[in-house]
Image 1: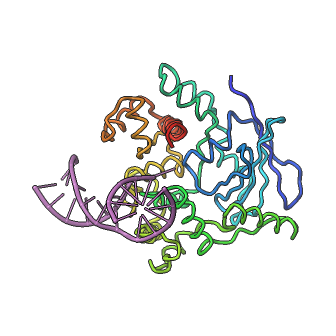
Image 2: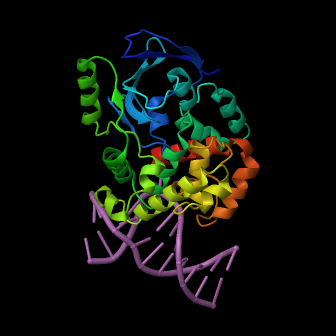
Length: 311
DNA sequence: CGGCAGGCGGTTA
DNA sequence: TAACCGCCTGCC
């Protein structure tokens, strides 16, 4: 049996101690925030037990208490939308899902998955805001992680709605200092409406390269036709091919059968399942047949494993 | 200097 | 529809 952790929520604004309390399965902050699914969380210590991040208009600090086996979420920023924070974080961290059961299923009769899961058994797949996921993964293409992170912060700082920090003036100053220290903007990612109104030259300071055009085109499409709902919708967006569409489907639409294949997944599939590295179609078919509805979880365990090994 | 990084769009056969 | 190619940028 996996260990039980608990989550508590606290808001600076009200100085309320705890207003939510929910049992969750295995969770490891480092594995969750550094398995490639998100770009706006930063470690505050070497142990990886404390992170600060921005998501869906919320800025928060999350601490893992080893002794109490709690994850404590401290909201730093009042959300711009009237979202219930307990609900928001529960959905974002996928707390209602039984990861122990998923890991058992994937491990059954599969030594490769057993090995991969052992490396990242505290991964949770974040349910992220759809538009933010689209923007993030368009930026991610043919790019490296430090630069992706930099682009996202610059973009947010320039054109994103400011997040109103919570609490007393002293609280706000402390919160801002923490965000500054780790290089996070206290802004949400820009909306599709804002991005659709920009010219490519407006985005020059963000250093997106040729992705600037993709973002603006996609923002215009979303403004005109609404947000995508299916894999086919996603694939029609400018700058969204099969890999990016699978990432958006998995992290933004909750399509847990998605199996994004990037260079790392190709690498791990060739090493561990003996595929030819160029055989993307074969890998996709294999994942569909073998992992089915759990493809996204399998992909994250495999990705994290190979990154730990060779990244 | 060329190679490369969590691919994609466009062109060609 | 599959195979190629060029691509912004920053870092090695």
